[in-house]
Length: 227
Image 1 (tube, rainbow, N blue to C red):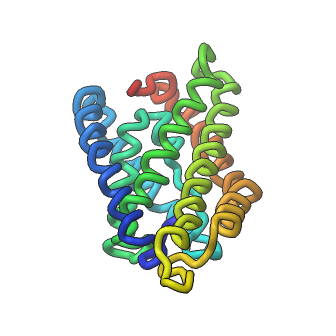
Image 2 (tube, rainbow, N blue to C red; image 1 turned 45 degrees about the vertical axis):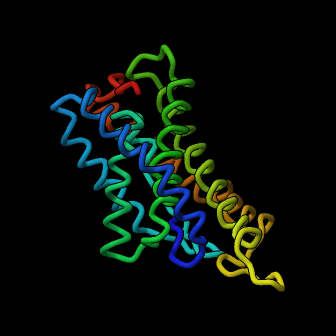
């Protein structure tokens, strides 16, 4: 889902950077206020976990990739604001050191993967798992759904971001200057790949990791940090 340099125009890149600035500031305030001292190492582990699983990329036509992110799992354990910070760190390191995701597209990539996935995943999990005990299988189902819906919401938005580029940036004769694919092609490529394949990978990874923690570290379950 990493958007590379050259596929989003300056208007879109600037817009998402402006959107993310207050979100990063808010995340810093919330995490400072709510995250307990013993949870701080988990924030680093969450960033490392997300970094590793995002390195297994599958190219998607149009200038992006598909992969698991882990944003829903980090949000379930630490809250969506902490997940925003953890995944942002992973994305920045990937862009600057490994060329995975464009530097100019960092705002859009962070919005899609560090903001949308954690918040959609977190509230999906809370809705489905409401009132369930820590050892309940319903929480595993909730984690599965959180992973699937979170990454598909982000994929849909990425497809829209690609698809509007020919409308925003083109030559006088209509030739696209950045991403050449319109909404029909871009949304179908991004949403289709994640709905059919990659979303299930994210869901299974989230559910299996959650199930493992449910058995081996149950103290982490049921103590989600609220926004």
